[in-house]
Figure 1 (cartoon, helix red, strand yellow):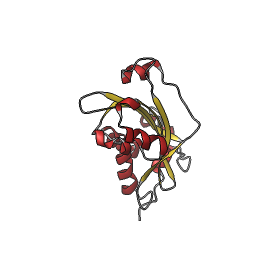
Figure 2 (tube, one colour; figure 1 turned 180 degrees about the vertical axis):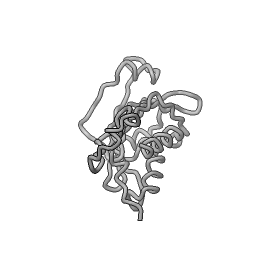
Figure 3 (cartoon, one colour; figure 1 turned 90 degrees about the horizontal axis):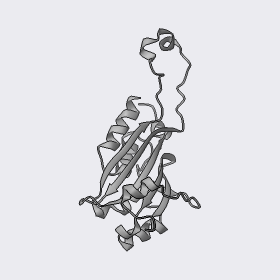
Figure 4 (cartoon, rainbow, N blue to C red; figure 1 turned 120 degrees about the vertical axis):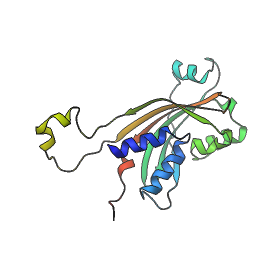
Length: 185
């Protein structure tokens, strides 16, 4: 739980989830080199909700693009990300990179010097049940190895330019693979 809370705090205190995951990957020796790659998921499209359009301050007829990626470090998928963005608010070069490569979104738009505004951060898993500290039987129950679920944390955020113009909404679901590092030596 402490590790997930540390990762959560680190993500909440930085504008780029990609760079934060890259540091996490390096610090926890998940891969060498510790580099985040966005593996695009093709043939998936999610229509933006009215809430997404409102958060991005776009009209119903204004084009939005959608991109789904898995952020990987080595063989570990650390995050599944759904991203809606306003192509008209990005440069043609940025749009080209996003449409034709596996470059992580944050790296593709880094020149915008964007700010991240977290809308929600939800812990999807807690290793111990609520009230465990007051239940002697639960505290003594040894069930063996801890089973980490597929998803442990979810963030929803808006990316905006330094002057406050929103250009992207992202929903990032962090996987149990963030805890798949080798034991200490």
